[in-house]
Image (tube, rainbow, N blue to C red; front, top):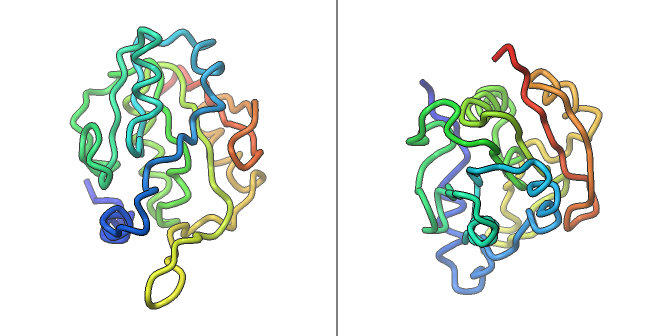
Amino acid sequence: MPKINCERDKYLWIYEQSKNKSYGKRNFGFGAYEIILNLQPQSLLDVGCGRGRLVEWAKTQGIDAVGLDFASGYGVCADLVDMPFDDNSFDVVTAFDVLEHLRHEDLELGLDEICRFAKSHLVLSIGYGPSKVMTPEGPLQLHPICTRDRQWWTPILARRGKVNYEGKTISADPYIIIELGKER
């Protein structure tokens, strides 16, 4: 299976820079706590977990939670398509501000892989704005498909199941809940 090029070196650089200690510090899933609890998962995988704030919260709720990030050092260190989990390993899979970091040509494969691990639901958020991380050479581009809007994303996500928009993320965009199709 081909690797998705999420440009890991950029993220490792950000994580290592003293002035960029904020990598993974924000909890983009904070506003989705009620959404997650309403789904009543026994298990949860947070893809792109950063420093694991959502994972730690889920554990306090009695949810068997695991985080995956390829640069923060928290949880399982793996790429999106090299995750060491079996199919349908988790009731719910979350990915907050992750998908927009994929190359356009890798998006379908990335979504398929995330869906493969979820038994019933995905809970997502998508960042639509440009990166604000500065390097000595200028701004660092981290969002290859960030200029796409909700109308562009919805049919892509709907191929996996029923799509609902609910609540508000840190940037006031709604969270995306996908009830996965039974035919998978």
